[in-house]
Length: 131
Image 1 (cartoon, rainbow, N blue to C red):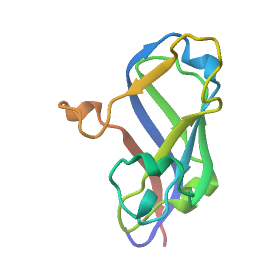
Image 2 (cartoon, rainbow, N blue to C red; image 1 turned 135 degrees about the vertical axis):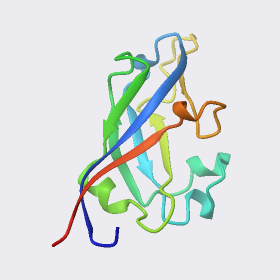
Image 3 (cartoon, rainbow, N blue to C red; image 1 turned 45 degrees about the vertical axis):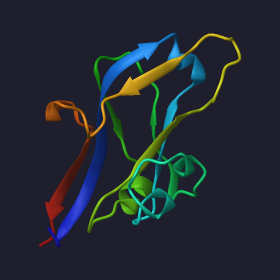
């Protein structure tokens, strides 16, 4: 609603799979795209990872093994960067791109194109209506 005051926002991801020990790559950080999306669209493209973010490090996920559903809160900067009139796009990345141990480490999450909609990532926004 137009008169909503956002109190908090969190991202909920459903873990699909992991290989090796992805926690050895550090934490997972989240960046928020400009309102038009990374690279000026919402399609997932390799350029998305070299395009500037509207806000960097708006959330940090550090407990990768806490269950199949992982949740992280957006910082105040992340809340302010939410696109209130359309889509909000985020990118995720580990602290380290590689830990140089020659062992594959990765984690995968279900996307918004999963066959089962209950597995989709969710942005959960808690708000109050202004008086």
